[in-house]
Length: 438
Image 1 (cartoon, helix red, strand yellow):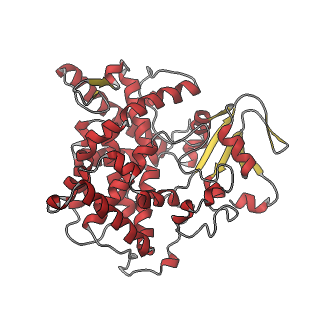
Image 2: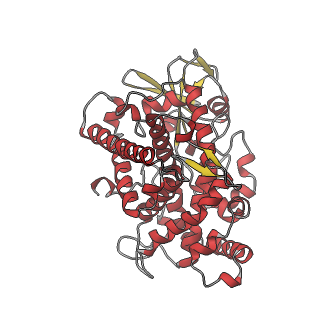
Image 3: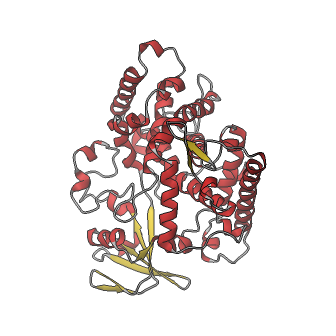
């Protein structure tokens, strides 16, 4: 935001990264262009300037090479098939069991770091939904996969993004971790084929209510390289934002006890409805397994209102079909557009007291005061394809935790801090500090 502070009356400013022209934009007109235009490339923007997840092409050459829109279309169809409501219903008992196993290590009392432990839970659930049972059924294998994940994430340094050809230590570590992930999945796929074994997971098939199996990846005829590429993209698209939101929700609920009370009451109401008194002595995971995904999606308005509050990131597009006019200024073809979500979500002209944790602002309609006034789950041509599952897993983590524990936030000295001092640092990724050393 510093660049906009220096150009207070301008809707954009530009700078160069090596040979690339980057234009940061803001304002309502910019949102209309950025999110609605067909001639801005989503994948080209992230491919060169984001440097995010692993690419199976670093290991295998037979990954299908298709254009921008085809990539999005194929990925969307595959993702929709694994995040259908009937599949989430079938997986719910496993999700809840996964959460209970992860939380059981804490015992009845103690301390935990939400930016470490909560990330691990998000990772576990994402592997369960988007990968394979061979890994998801083992906490140890999930931790191994998580370690590789963070090695790839931390391989995206400024040097590796700006100079992708330079063999820096971070770049080599990222390639090594990607290779290990690739051959891990490759071995699992080969074993299934050799054993003629089918599982109800993303790699293979999912069972329909009448006992029929609907094809997912292997049964769709996807090559091993394409299967692994899809799984890698899904894992790396679904971890960081969900982990960040899940961790901050607990911190802000502790700051605003009236909201915590409302959330706990909402959860109790759901349990009373779907897992009544006769089940009250059952484990929490078992009781929450009785709540259908439709209820998680449509009957938790209080908890759902918390999710948009901590959804912040930056978004990138590339101009690929000729020069672009924005606000009477020409942006050259090939330029990268950057839009910082905080420019909208922290805008006092849209949200009153935007820095304050206030989920009620959305029921008050503050986000409707401007075009695309809320961006957290994607808008326009690029809505978040994984929104349903992301909201589901965050709600599930909150539900299982709040049903079993009373908690308060403390600092590194074990002292409860003044809530006014707990302000997110927008320049901090809040990733597990020790993850690269595990």
